[in-house]
Image (cartoon, rainbow, N blue to C red; front, side, top):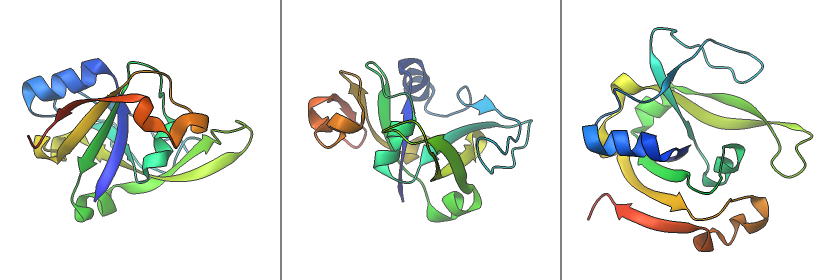
Length: 142
């Protein structure tokens, strides 16, 4: 299943250079105010969104990267949860967003399908016309 992530240039550079996820991600403590994940505090995780439009809950500023991953359904199922975010239009209401927190030790480089650099800040007003806001950097399958 395709899932989506926003990351920094440093993260995508490390992943491409090392062809693995060993040196990216963060360790987390469970926090019921942010999401319903139960983290193992010894492991590093990356978070992914189920829906493309949900990247707007992340930091979609100029210079960030939108990453597209194709991760097996069974992996996603085992690490699915709900994140709690302020809505990205008025920043007033808490919304529940389907997402995945996956330990980096079970991610493979082949899951990374493609990524794009944001040329400008991306928000909901120009999300429908986001092709003007991103530049294709590399097609992993080429």
